[in-house]
Length: 84
Image (cartoon, rainbow, N blue to C red; front, top):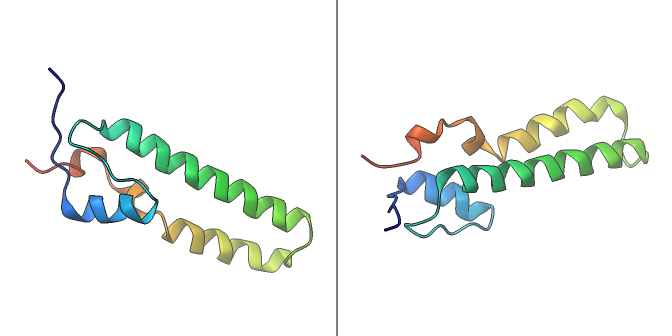
């Protein structure tokens, strides 16, 4: 029998922002890994744009911060993803 997880509404909203709509059987670790992979892809793309000269180096730190702010769920411990 598969475990059923009950996600907090805030977590569901954050996951939906990244195109993820978990089912009750969806493992929180797999969801976190998927969000982390999206973040890693975007940070690598941002670095590539910097190296390609698409924006000045002086803007890089601010762009990294702005990108990180789009992924607050990665700062939330997984124990807090679920309702009791």
